[in-house]
Length: 400
Image 1 (spheres, rainbow, N blue to C red):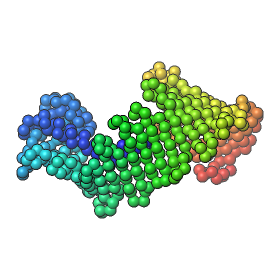
Image 2: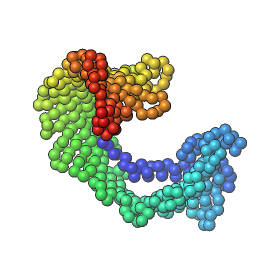
Image 3: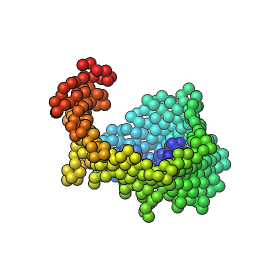
Image 4: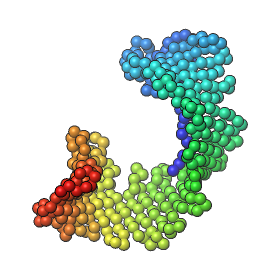
């Protein structure tokens, strides 16, 4: 688990993006004029267009220039979707041009208000739902530190966080406290401007990740003061994850996994006390779907074979996205057939069904029917004929 960019940091990044877009558009617009831009659904200007060309684009951003507003100026941006106004932003600046406030509206209702201090730093964010205040976020700044507190509409603290920066300006420590939840802390260690270690602490669990040239190669998991597991990551020359070794000291267990070029597991070998106790191998088709699995243990060998609604050749020929819905699953133990499951997928998006036949010495002896995940019927089979049947009421209670 890596949380190098916590949720609050992401929120700050989104806010900065919105403010940057507002400043960018305002800088390009003449005083009092309306300027039109081809845009996207979040209101980023992509290309300046004429007013007459606005109807040719789905998303259009309209910047209404600068409007006098008391001692400062106000700027307005409108986002149109097919000509209908879906978002509105109002930005206020003081006489010197410093940003002091910004408001967001969606479908005519206020959704957010942001306030800034005289240096342009964000000081408060109010969030609204249907025009009603739901939360308030306050930001306080100290040398190399930002404190954030989020309160609900009733003033109760929802969570608080602190961001502490190193002398280089990089984030060094992040702490989040939420009533009723474990305290979350993250510490980053840099060397020469490059991240070399990250420690995430949540309750009694601590994850320590180590990096080389900005790439994670090792993760330690601690529970209290006890080392629970170590993951060693192997990468290809181009940075792709190709292998992982997980060591659990208390169990004297080591699991080594290999991955394909898409990061999907191909093989996993588990050893206890230096002796191999399990081997699992997956065979995948061109679409990456597992079509065969083999598992070897001291008890013998197990095999699974999977067929899908659309086979890989048909999917490739049609250019469609591979269909991951199973059609059949065949399961064997030590070369003896154990079960075959057949899935049925209704064309009307109704509840799927499946039937599993269980085998003994190559012949079916039990057949179980499911509707969705609910067992609905069970049949005893002999010489290919149903000799006894039970029907269930949906809570696995037999009725007959």
